[in-house]
Amino acid sequence: RENVLWIHPEPAAKRGIKEGELVTVTDQKGRSGKIKAKVTARIRKDTIFMVHGFGHWDKRMTTAYGQGVADSDLASYEVEPHVGSMSMGLSLVKVEKA
Image 1 (cartoon, rainbow, N blue to C red):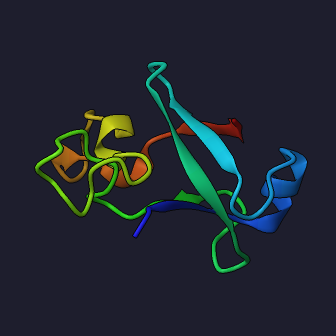
Image 2: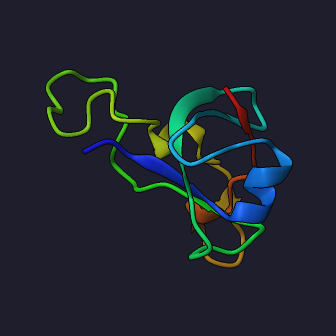
Image 3: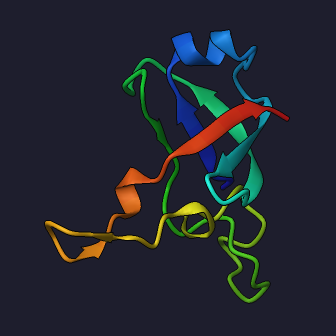
């Protein structure tokens, strides 16, 4: 199964993104990857989502290899000061049509 990027219909429409189209996700450090869009109202308008563990670059990871974007490649490795661990769920990214 291929990993997809969940995006709400309103921000998707503003960016000209349609269901199943390829989008580019870029983080604040310029790291990016391509992934197919899943346009759904089942997510907040200010949020995107992708499943953790897919898009791996190692061919031995037979389920995850090449299946979308590896979220960990785009995650912020900054420490969340109130928790004392990585703030993986708070990475800011730009999403645009590929």
